[in-house]
Image (cartoon, rainbow, N blue to C red; front, top):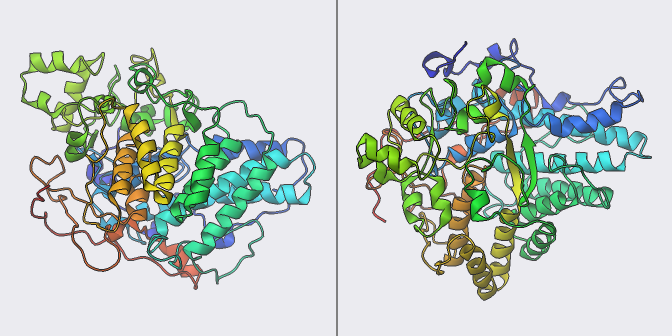
Amino acid sequence: MKKIFLSIACVALAVPFLTSCIEEINPQTSYVTEKQASDTPGFFESSVASLTSNLCGNFTYSGSDNHPYDFGYPSFFLQRDAMGQDMVTAGTNNWYSTWYEASYGLGPTYARCQVPWTYYYKWIDNCNKVILLYKNAPEGRETGAGIAYAMRAMFYQDIVRMYAAKPYALDPEAETVPLVLDDTQISSENPRATFKAAYEQIISDLNEAETLLAGYKRADVYTPDLSVVYGLKARAYLEIKDWANALSYAQKAQSGYTMMSESEYLSRDYGFNSPNSSWMFGVTFNETDPNIKDNDGDSSWGSIMILENGFDCGYAANYGGPMLIDRHLYETIPASDFRKKCFIDFAIDDMGEGDAIEALGAYTYYPEQILNSANTAQVGVGGMELKFRPQAGKYWTKYDAWVVAVPLMRVEEMKLIEIEAAGMINEADGIAKLTEFAKTRDPYYEYGGHNDAYGNTTTSQFQNEVWWQRRVELWGEGFATFDMKRLNKAIIRNYANTDHLEGYKWNFVNQEGGCLYPKWMNLCIVQTETNYNYACTNNGTPDAPATDSEPYEW
C-alpha cells in the first residue's frame, strides 16, 4: 500500500525536470493534425465524449499517482479556495498547503505552476480539435460542436480569472492568458489577451453553443446542455458587470431546477455526492478511474474532502489533512441556518471524549472516525466539514466510498447571480429576492446582518450581503478566489480565536491603491510558455508575508 507524505513529495521540482515526467501543454504548439481530424467512424463522437469524461478521474498532470491533487477539475476548486480565508488547509499532511501558504513554489519555475497550465490547455486543445472537425464536416455534428464551444468557454472563463493581472472591475484591459483557438497558428508571438478581449471570445463561444445546442436533450448532468450555457453566460455577464444580461441568463438557467431542501443538503447518504434537482452540471468519479483504483484511491476528491470512511485510507480521514471552514465565517452563520450543520461546532473541542462522541452524533453516523481524523491531524474537530459525504452505503467499502459525483453548477448559484444583478439594477428588488432566498436556508433571516467589508468600502452593503450568502452556500465549490478578485476583497485570517495556522495568519485591510486582494491570487504562467512565447508577459511570483498580522477586531 503506497502512501505519499508531504515531508519530501511536497518539495517543488524545477521546470527542467518536468519534461521527463509530464506532458507539457504549450498553447503555442497546440494544433490539430490531419490524422487527428480523420473521418474514422465514431472518431468525432468519441472526441466529444472525452471533453467531459476527462474532466476528472485521470492523472492528467503527471501521468502517475504521485500527486494527490492530480485528479481533475474539482481539484482546482480547492486550490482556489485555499488561497483566501474561507478554507483552512489544516493538519500535519495537507496537500493543498502550497496554495494556502502562498508559497514561492507557485512561481513560474516550479512544478505546482505547471498544474493548471497542463490541465486547462489540454482541455482547450481537445475542444479546438472537436470544433475544427465540425467546421470541416458540419452535417450532423452540431450537438458535439455546441458542447465543445460551451466547454471551451468554461475553461477560458476559469483561467482568465485565475491569471488576470487585475479583475475586470478594476481594469478591463488587464492582461490574462494567450488565447489559443481552433484556427490559431503556431507562433512565438501570442500575447496575453486583455480581459475585455478574452470575454468577448468567451461570450462569442457561448453564443455559438446556444445556437448549436437548441433542442438538445442530454442523458444526464455530466454533459452541458442549453441550461448550462445560460449559466455560463450568467457567470460571464456577472464578471463584466453587465447586470441586465446577468439577470436575464441567470433566470433562464433556472428553468426546470429546484433548490436543495434541508434534508437534501444535509443528507448523510447523498449529501453533495449525487446529482439532485438543483444540480445543473457535474462530474463523477468511476470505479475504473485511475484516481480511484491506483494508490488506494488516495489521489482523489474523496480522499481529500470526505472525512467518513471505514478503511485506513484518505488524507482527510486518516492521514492528517482535513479541510476546515474559517471560524469567523462559521460564527457568523446563525444557528437557525441549516447550512451551519455542514461544519462541526467548535464548542465540541471543549468537551470530554464521551460527550464529544455524543455531540458528534448530531453530524455523522461515525463520530469515532471524526475524532480519529482530528487526532491524526493534531487539530480539534471544530470547523471540520461534513458537506461532502461518501457514496451511500459504501462507507466500509474500499475505494467505492469515493466513487462520488461533484457539482460544477447548481441552481442556487444562478439564484444568487440573479439576486446580485437585480440588486445592482434596483437595490430594493435585490433585497427582496435575497431575503426570499435566505429564508429557504434560515427562516429567521433578516437583511443587514452580514456586511463584513473585508477592507473594501467600494462594494455596497447589498453586495456584501450577497457575497456572504455565496461564501456559505458555495463553500468548497471553487468560487472563493473568483469572488474576492471580482469584488476586490482583502483577506482576514487573524482575529481572536482564529483557526488559521501559525505563520499564515495574514490580514490585508485598509490597503491603499488598486487591488486589495493578495497578489498571489494572480497565478503565474509557467516559464516554459514565456520562454517560447516571446510576447507573453507574466505575473509576479508569490511573496507571502514573513510574519503573522496583528489580530483584527471585528
